[in-house]
Image 1 (cartoon, rainbow, N blue to C red):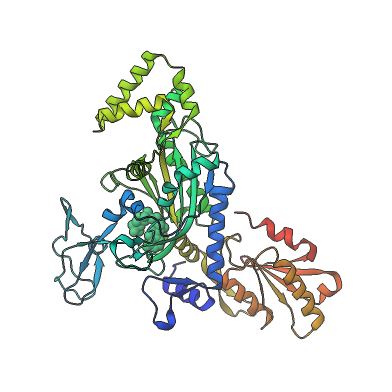
Image 2 (cartoon, protein in one colour):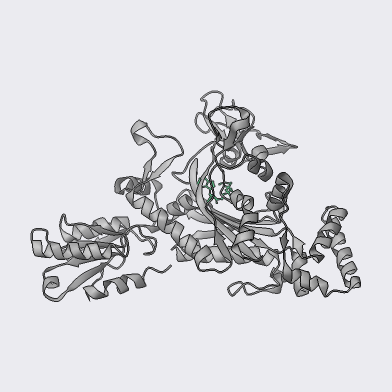
Length: 525
Ligand code: ATP
């Protein structure tokens, strides 16, 4: 069925998933609040990500860092100088655009002239049709603030535009405390802020949003070769579904994480056919990146990015080493032992090969020689694979995917449309609604209320005693509650209840004592 963003956003407002921030004051562009049901949905997404990426693995640990960090972090990362979007203004109607998006919408491409960007011929303001547009100007996306009472440049700080940098900034503390050896990862989810030129598509591009990011540190390929005698590449057809292998090079690790993340999105309920992979071309890649894949989803407004998975080499840690003066090298005992067993001739041959390799890639021979000397001592700066996802974007994708209108005909031939959010039960905001069949029979209501109190200790539950039972089922369908438990007169006799299933509308009879295990079975991702 064709999904309509307006219908979905109006349901989200009406049922308490998503509200415009500060609406009583007219709202604020690019900021959204998650209501009673939206906050549950987001929490479930975050938890499901954490389970899959951290808890179920032995090679990933967590971090919960601050939003404001030392401003040098953003100098080292390149955000202070380069985290900018090109912005264009219409001189007539004053509408502001992101230059690349404006061109793309009109089937054109921004022209790159050295460091400058220029608008191509024929681009017009989509609002008023005017050709009177400014040339693109660079606009830094970081929100600036001041720490302490004095508002001068020495006190300036930024709200983080991504969560990832804190992982690099805390790298040494984590290595010193977590007892993990490379390859291992550090995961973090939390708020990020970007002063987007043009927030749009509902929550898709917001100015305050949440990210779920992993930095997975791996050995440089040269270290893998010294330890294993070879480096497995994608051309070797490695099995990416089993346990990671010691001889994997960066290319295989990168592909492994793409597969892991696709698996997770499918578990979260997004159908394979709506998920797309976009491999960035050489021109699009950041200068330090070796590969970057976007996982995209077919939103009602087009196929757009949910997550980016980048192979970032040792760029980030090297930058922080340079800016902080602290060595970001790790000591790898497997590597040291492997090198100790090598003959001097084998070492020389290896060194010559690496230097030639680096030279061919336009890199410095002296640096290459130092890099190899460090490897022989078991030391290197780890490389990194970064799967970086947006929590709000996924919440929006799940809402769009879950939305369904089912055309029904009842026994009397009457037609009806049932609105239902078909969330994966593990992600549904409410798992079980408890419904007393009638509310004017105290014994029955009490029994139902007690059951509600018991079930609440397991999962988020809802209570609804108003209206006909059919209407109440529909109310729960519309917010995606997978199970309704109805307490009726038979319950008083034999302690059984009716469980009504959201997707099939099937009703089954179960003893109260079996509800928890019955529901729990459906809740694993
Ligand atoms: P875009 O090109 O869409 O601006 P990006 O490529 O700069 O995004 P990344 O820096 O790779 O995005 O951020 C990683 C993830 O964070 C994105 O895949 C997305 O899910 C999320 N994200 C980034 N910017 C926003 C935003 N303004 N609103 C909501 N989510 C965002």
